[in-house]
Image (tube, rainbow, N blue to C red; front, side, top):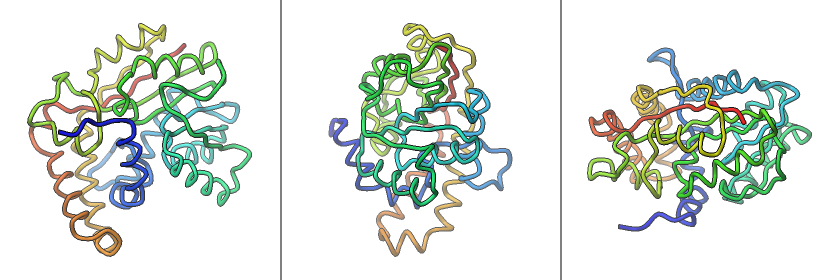
Length: 271
């Protein structure tokens, strides 16, 4: 079994971001749904709206998105809530895509991107009002260090709101190994309880922890519908193997082991 490293994670997203954008969406995160007919994109934007509401994001907010990818969350929040957003990601090619999108949308005065890792953020102490992150810490080995960095760059009374995958077993089993391997997660996901301990150990005041584990099924049901809609484009651009592998993984994520043990949560804390 190949050990997942930071370099492997970076290469995964560098080489596959175009495929992932087509087969999942421009948002590399999970969504919240209000009906079975909703599209994946709609649910994903509802996740961002929920985070914005919790963190009280507005025109005077300076926001940092840790693990910003191609910048979709920053762009969405800056356009809708008129905040100033900075995205940081360890994959330089993704930040360059984000910079190109900023220029096309004319948001140079409100959105910027930098290269950096969650465990060593390239910003001064107390630089931001709000820090967000979506399904990024599951890719980080030293999560305590990453959370401490989020604490460091937040102003006093600053807000952190993030989502992440969870594993109530706190161990990788034969039934969940495929999930970890496909998503390039180097170590076992946290549980709701272990995240609470990590956050309070740094000094954060926990205001809300929301267990959205039931939404895992909704996400992969929506993803399968989306994949069918873009099937011809996936086949033309990436081939049958890419389509079949993605479809098989989405179906696997609807299986009992994933439904029963892999979850998803949102955390809102204050410095």
